[in-house]
Length: 238
Image (cartoon, rainbow, N blue to C red; front, side, top):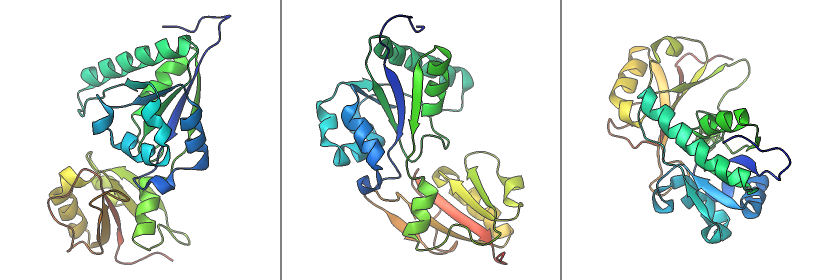
């Protein structure tokens, strides 16, 4: 569906709700969630949507708003992913064309490995207005939870999706953040150990069942999906 000239159009907001602690939602995110006409979620239902369960604790009014489910399959199969993104964008465009403001919520920040961005790009191409509301990234929250600096001085920072090939990136200088490491944990640990790197991890940061691990030796082979590893060479840069 394309934008129709001469009629009031809604705006699509991509709202990052932070890593898990509802107190980490920004004031702007809270305002947009209160003001939007429709709340969109990247799941079949609200009960199974982690981002929704976080946001509703800060904005109880969400329970009274119309909910637009936009299920996204957890797969790397490109055709299946593209089909789900096209369907989600089409459903969102229907709401925008009717003049409704839609807030699509996402964990962490909406600009970092976010499913929201696939919808954002399609909606923009249709001619609708889009706006991104930043959220606190999981790696910043994890560093704070571990009571440590993320980077210091001249250190470089590399953000890596751990479910893809990361070997070359691990050899770059600086601190490595390995996002969503849970399913690849034995491989990730072996790669870090082979390079003599130090590592800490937070599992379910800010959520129920949160756990912290202060060394590579402490990190278990079986870890949850929301497991974030912060690693660096044992010879720290100044």
